[in-house]
Image (tube, rainbow, N blue to C red):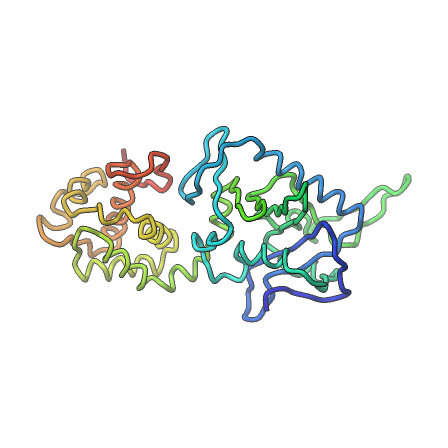
Amino acid sequence: MMSQRMGAKMPPSPVELLLARRPETVGQAAFGHVDVTRAGREGLEDVVDDAVRQIEGLTEIDFNPDDRAEDGEILTAPLRGFDDWYQAQAPWSLERVVDELRNPGLPDVLDEEGIRHGRWGFYAIRVPIENMDIIVVRAKSPTWGLTSNKFFASLVGTQLQPVTEPLLAFDRTADLIVVDDTVHVLNPGAVERLFVDADAIKARADRTTASFGAALAARVTNPTLDAIQAVISHNANVGRRVEKLVRSGVLPNVTAAGVRAALPDAGLQLGDFGASGPLQAVTPDHATKLIEIAADLYYQPRFESSSRKVAYFRRLPR
């Protein structure tokens, strides 16, 4: 069950609004459609137009979740396969958002209760502009700051009247914009927080650890792998770092000699991972430092890698 459909059928419209969330229970819908009046469509078109202007004329740079665009640049990636950077099976993934909006049909729309109590976490707006199919995504609830602990009113003539209908607000910017089959990432940090499933990362700690150990050029002891798995199973941020290192393909460059040489930079003694042979990092702190060193060797970069990489997750002292 991908979308929450309730109420009247919504006729085809050049502008579509989708509310989205991480399902809290099995079977809960990830998406809900909202019907929009003509005046509302014009307002949403202006929102999308303002967002798209932010990426016009920028130089496109291949997307990596650890990269940050410089002035005059925008990170871009193909739409298909984008979910693989994050949580491909997540019901609220970007590719599913796009499919939901571009899927032809007459979806049912949310009623007042569905909007008010849906706990929607982000929204997407689809607008066709000059033969382009554009979808803007904002990693923010459209009801943020408009909760029931405030009194909302409007001035009707000279009288203050309470507003009882649910309110939604839309920023004139976006965290990512999909133009046809290309994703433009304006805010990588917000996109990371939106699409990463922390519980899923911790649940697959055993597979992530096995992939990490197999990819390293350095040999590590089994107790070291056990310690790494334990850390990942309790810390999704560390698990996410390991997953991205595995995907990067640079771990075959991480040798035992390189790790041991970097130990003083990590605040450790040269013999802390064993004087020779397989690396021994059997405590949670040492296992975490091993991961940080592997990432540090990649991001500096001391090995051959993209010069655009930044040490965004660097934790070691300089």
